[in-house]
Length: 341
Ligand code: NAD
Ligand code: WQD
Image (cartoon, rainbow, N blue to C red; front, side, top):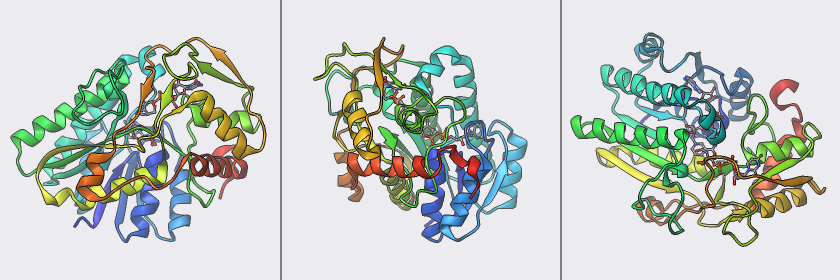
């Protein structure tokens, strides 16, 4: 079983929640993050919540020299690789940056792992690789048909991992295809704090709720869905985190590449999400219908059975839990982590 875990992108939304969980379960945690979409304050909060220290490095994953230094200083047993850029719309604007950061970050990490005899990796993949779904729910065997550079970068990373596993039988890689992680740590001290104007719908709505943004633009109201707005499978970030720990604990079961969806199997439209968050905040969150966002698809809902059959993992929290926790964090931290700890 791994005892020292390198978490790339550990200051980010999912990474920071994962670090708390790993520390609480007795792992030693080493983080590499360049803070392009996060801040060191997240790691301060992680350590405060968990009551244990971690070791953080400020470095870009593409900096092999810096990465090698981390592997030389710590006896890393396994890697959880979160660090990436992740906004669909932005990836249509700056595709080359997306390929550079997401692909070169991953190959740099794999090279450094290989050079230091580290063979176990859990990789953050994404439901976006399925593209415009022909049918839902989506199983892992459904064809990948990414519709934007972000999704394509994740799909290519999966192929890179597959090829690496093919060549080096000692590697054990698990790609987790998360659907839409939202919510926050129930302490209200850790949540989603993107830099700049949020791209994702929940952090955007949370800033509407505290008056930092005026209203949500609902991207597309003419999709072939019950209310015309796009449907997603929102999943509590702590369920995603639990999925990572379970995956890590099963890395040693077999070598090679395995792929699992992490979703709930429940679809929610943008308008249903606005309503649920409005209930959680106790006020109607303003929105306006707008054009579709380039690169978006109508419906993405997981078939979560493979991971349940393999490891007994399933999501345990519902949309009301996700909204309550997201709002608690935003209410207590209206300016993100700027208020200190
Ligand atoms: P995030 O942006 O909050 O976290 C990513 C972290 O990686 C940030 O702290 C950022 O500063 C860091 N980072 C980015 N580029 C880096 C680089 N080159 N070197 C070092 N650090 C770098 O995102 P998140 O929501 O926590 O997502 C984590 C992972 O999960 C990403 O790979 C994302 O693609 C994937 N994912 C996210 C979602 C989602 O909806 N949040 C869904 C599916 C998959
Ligand atoms: C959700 C819905 C938008 C913003 C992508 C990836 C997924 C995961 C999350 C990483 C969509 C609508 C959004 C807004 C809106 N991440 N929306 N107004 O694009 O579903 O998922 O990011 O992998 O894997 O595919 O997430 O939160 O951006 O959007 O109406 O201001 O909300 O069109 O239907 P998305 P999102």
